[in-house]
Structure formats: structure tokens, C-alpha cells
Length: 119
Image (cartoon, rainbow, N blue to C red; front, side, top):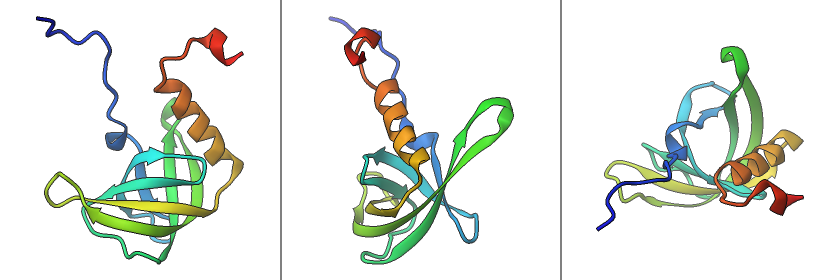
């Protein structure tokens, strides 16, 4: 029986923190992203229907972070399978072009497509 993993798993939620843009305090982690929204994993439930000013701090070179500010509306929120954690889905109301670039970069990074297939 095969028991050794050959492909390293990348746990995205542990790397990309989401902050409140106004207070700069962390509110959770990105669970997943799409062109139109994102899922947030948080220790607290999010208010459905509320509009949030979010900030992503994307690690870049030389310990400098790229800042991506977003305005998003919470569409749903429910308790995660992990105790004391909540998943919340957001639709983007305002996002800069850098957000679309982030989504594309994550798609490429976490896909198994060859480089020649995207050309």
C-alpha cells in the first residue's frame, strides 16, 4: 500500500492573513479566492449583509508585503468543521487589479497544469 506523499500540500489559510483595513487588526485567513470573492476563515462569526473594508498583506521579497485593499460584502457565514472557527463568503464590491493578479497567481501555483498548456 502506498503511504508516502509525493506532492507537497500547501495549506493556503495559514499563509494569507486578512486584516481589517481601518484598524489593521487581523480578522482571519483566506480559505479560497475567486475573481468575484473570497472565503474567510475566522475565530469570530461575520455579520451577513455587512460591508467590510479588508486588507491582504501578500508576502513579497525582502520581507516587504504587497498591500491589497478590498471592499466586500459578507454573503454567508457558518461554523467551520474546526471548533471555534467560522467560514464566511464575501462578494467583492471594490478590488484593485492586483487582486485579479493574486487570483491568477494562486491558480497557477496550486494547479497541475504544465507551463506549455497555458500558452
